[in-house]
Image (tube, rainbow, N blue to C red; front, side):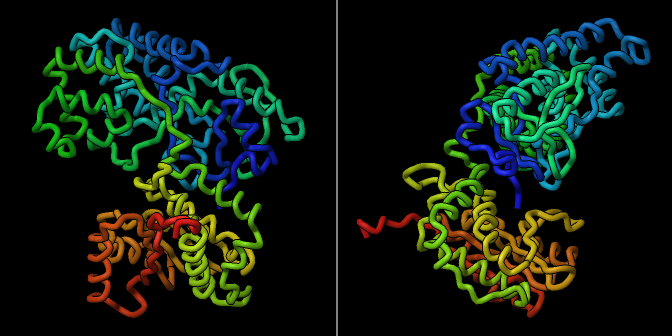
Length: 475
């Protein structure tokens, strides 16, 4: 299961949080990105004035393109300023399998420059276009803009990381060089890179989808901008947003220069809010909460485990015990509360929270039974939530869903079975957390499952009641 920096380096996470730093995973990425529009309000000393630094970098490229022609020296310099290598050490982005950054290669940088030049020639004289170029360019979304922002602010990120980790003398560190200066930072044991930190106040969540061709998906990283675009283009745009791809949008907006200018102007006026870590809709810190509950209530929680499986039990028996124990923990020990984003327990968190909760509760049993639980392994056809195995034999795949998911039948028919075949799994299970009284999607799944059973091929279904329940004093 993922390892948080504070846990690995034995740092009190509350003390760490008071320093304003986001506590990253060391072995996977968090689905968050650095939103450049949030830099202006950041009061962390190393980041004061950082918004101006980013805009100055864009302005340098912009001024080159005012005079540049394709193939000229100025054009090549603009491409160089847009291109950048990945910045190892930042655990942000879409990838769940590593903490490697994406970067922008020479070909993509050349394409961005060409698009920017077209926008400039259309009459938009504002360097901010490099922040919204993702609306027009394939391969560019909020994670790439985040990566570019972090590269521009690299020295500040290194300095901030050094200062924060410097508050904890017991953390081992070694020298790393960036931008001609040497910094003292801890080493990520999984990647042998520096552990880099960013302020939590400049982060926001990435859109769930990774398809950058749908403009509605791309704009979802900035809801206010998307809504403004919808308003500008009318009701038909709202209904057909997902039918537009980036080249079509670019052609349309370049043919409407005044509309394009208004779009850029509206982006400048957007007032963004950072990710709300208290509501934590992604469940980003849910695993930490589960682990902490286990540590403080170990005896009470362990009494709910079935304890029938052992290190010699087949992996399927172990996974079934995991599912049964998770069911008891959620239904009998109020773990269901961790799946809601508000104290009234009216609004569930995202589905990722159910996945994290399941994995956190599974750790104890898997460790005792010597079963490896891998979260989101790559099967060759896409990620499945969990793969349980002991060695190369007896693989069991588990997909966790919320009852609000309209694609439960698809998961049963296609998703899990494709993953099972690709990963060589012998068994697959769909665990559904019930989080709403409206169970129409769940009812469809159960009816479909009853009518389409193929022994050894169709997934088993396990239901966990995570609906809000009255406290013991009110029951």
